[in-house]
Length: 164
Picture 1 (cartoon, one colour):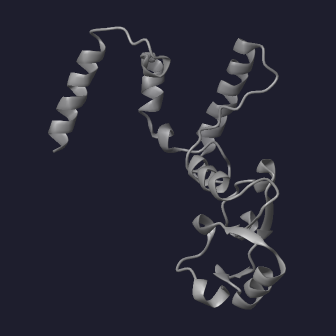
Picture 2 (cartoon, rainbow, N blue to C red):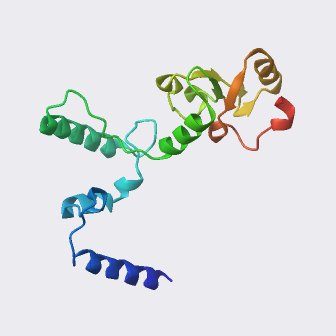
């Protein structure tokens, strides 16, 4: 099966050389860019919160400076996106500005999404040793009109029956 896929990729590469793409997103990239995207960096984050990101942070900073110089910009955002896009799709699909979202705080091991940047109120779930404190969660459920409990950052298995 791998050989079949590799053969199809080779045929695709040959085909792409036979014409000019007029859709910008399908244009060829430079060999150096291809080398970078084919490296382990394609699976790394540009955030110190994750382990193994030492050089990716340096690369992001270097690219950031070059982009700002190239475009004469004061600011640029060159950090790789990954799970953030999936999380944002859920947040934007199920909530609106001003809604309340509950999840595990960054200090307790939760995902550092930064809900306030998207005008959502964030409530930290009461956790102890990576488990949700069910009694405190029931109180939060009664006292706050939560729109969403961010399941991608909750402990597993979910104690839904105990906190609803």
